[in-house]
Image 1 (cartoon, one colour):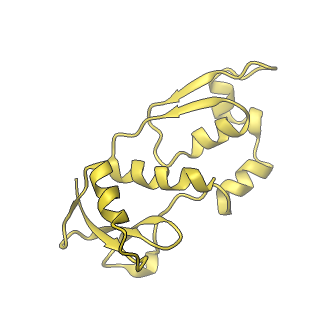
Image 2 (tube, rainbow, N blue to C red):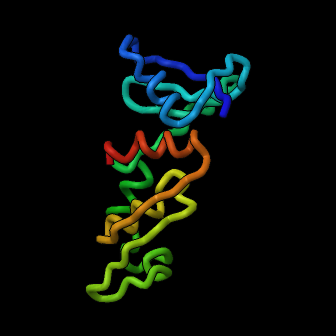
Length: 133
């Protein structure tokens, strides 16, 4: 997959090259979308509209923290859909994991979740966010 790859960390450790190799990403300087390695996280940016900001995975703050603290937990639709009842916590395969929001909620209530994502950029963003969660 071709995308503009940018490193804003100031490091010379080759982390961006390792990331690109892991996810099969090729640098395309002319691509409007950029995958940017910042000192805090990996994010996706639209290069021609910087006011939009970057898209990154954050399970600790923002909407996900609120959902974890005040959401329905076992009462959420996803939890009901996988059959959580009483002490029964199934192992779940999320075959359309995206940024991992639903899987995060299921894991928060105690399910073991395996996430699959076919889009390399989305999978890279999620993989970057999971250790911080």
